[in-house]
Amino acid sequence: MKIYHFLLFIAFCVGVTFYATNKKGKTAADTFEWQTSSFSEQGHDTQALDSMLNLIRNGTYGYVDELLIAQRDQILVRERFGNDYRVLSAESDGKMGCGYGVCDDSTEISLYNYYHPRYHPYYEDSRLHTLQSVTKSVTATLMGMVIAEKEGLSVNNPLAPYFTDWKLSPEVATHLEKATIKDVLTMRLGLQWKEAGLTLEQDPDATKMELSEDWIGYVLSMGVSDLPDSVYNYSSGATMLLSEIIRQETGMQVAAYAEKNLFAPLGITEYYWKSTPTGLTDTEGGLYLRPEDLAKIGLLHLQQGKWMGKQLVPEAWVEKAFQKHSVDIYGDGGTEGYGYQWWITGITPPDVVGLGYGGQSLLISPDTEVVVVINAWNVFDNEAANIFGGLLQVLRAMER
Image (cartoon, rainbow, N blue to C red; front, top):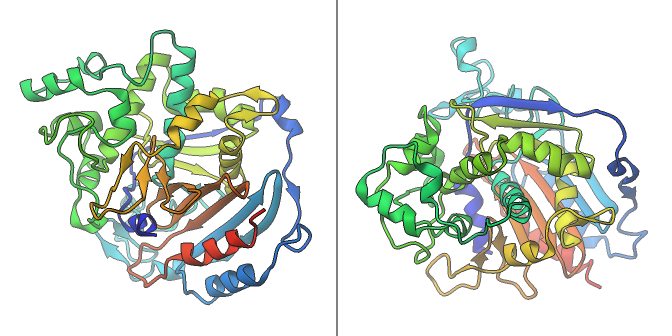
């Protein structure tokens, strides 16, 4: 269960915006519709679910915004909890921003402000909820799609050719000749980075990167700490390198590539994606989606990359992405692991989770054929119990 505690330390994102509503006519994706059912209709015991919902409503798990539980193509639970962030943020003021009524003027109410409710957790009162570092898991899926369509491109390609436009130290330049795309995907890049275990108010490198003008430049200015593919070290900066790699390989920003190749086939018609000051898509934490659309990405993976009869993501990629490429990630002999920007739980059989700051989760449980989306916004120093304890009880009630 320690894997879920890392929610407190997952990096957040800032930057200018990329917002799109794609309604350019009917596609095959329009024929997919979530079916609606319930625990009782599917023959599941509701005791654990009722207990978890009661704990959410009484605040035990902090500020949970939405919960969606789907089994195959059936949405069994879809609950919104109506937190009022104008009230909740009213006394918040710090390095991350200022809350409602606290900001001195309108210039402080921006995408760089993580306390003000205009942009967090929902985008301008829409149903688009910040995903924070669940964005990393979506980015890895896009990387797999790009590799599948580009001849000669693989996870073993070295990084050096992608970053010739930046002035690098000799040490980093040599390092990038040996480091690969796979090293980025598995958080085994080997560049210095301090993020895990630090709150966002403690100035981790993720915060410093996001306050810089050139995010890639910041990442590449770091020194070398380890050989590539030798030591796991969670790094939002590493994931930002994927944004530049995908841009060069496709000639498109990641947000535009995703809209055309992933979102449109899934029938995702509305999203919001931040970009950096240089216009690069923020792949480390900038994506906003509605819960039912994020659940589609979970269902796509549950179906080994196939959607409406079409193989959108190679089945082999999904298999590799869900393997534990990094193990014992806490250094205590635990069985939790990390795949291609996905967390792999220590239970048997393992579940796969995308995690994001504030309480964002996309859980994929192949054993029960279940996808769970949790959106929350526990950023106000409030006490919140770990919701995954209750969720695992719910999943046990859904076992085949």
